[in-house]
Length: 212
Image (cartoon, rainbow, N blue to C red):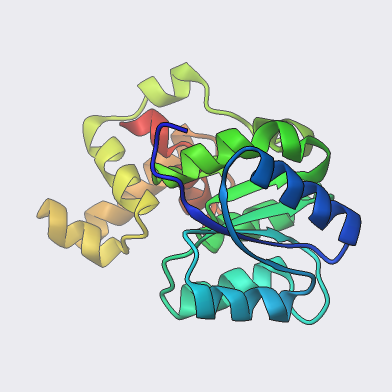
């Protein structure tokens, strides 16, 4: 691996899956510093060892992967969370986006995607498996939708992807709060998004690389 090898912990309550992932990472030369077979152990490892990346099963006893991610977010921990899941529900995927989770991959494709995921996450870019996007029907960005956005709308989307509030965006771009709200409304219309809370935030995070 040509980039700095990150420190990693893994957690899964299925012993065979945990061993399979552990053996794979060790064989590939990754810096695996801890393993856990339930959510509480995993969270304690994150607190104690401060790994660069934590690869977690989404459903575990005591604490789920999502609950661990929420705790890490609340505590401003720098560990990047990657979730591995058997579940293909759209609401779980969207919840992961809202919690600033850095990776989300399906167990059935985990070994073929995990290396690319770790490399991408190490570089500071979220990795959301295209396979899961296809399976849950996440609509990927069409070029004509992107081209319909004005330069101002693109700037606002970039700031939304960085979790900036309307007030912060208005201050940074020297425009009024109401102007930001109007831009947001126009963006939602142009991108054919549902006018739900966080729909624009989720879209911006999913497509941030196309806004560069």
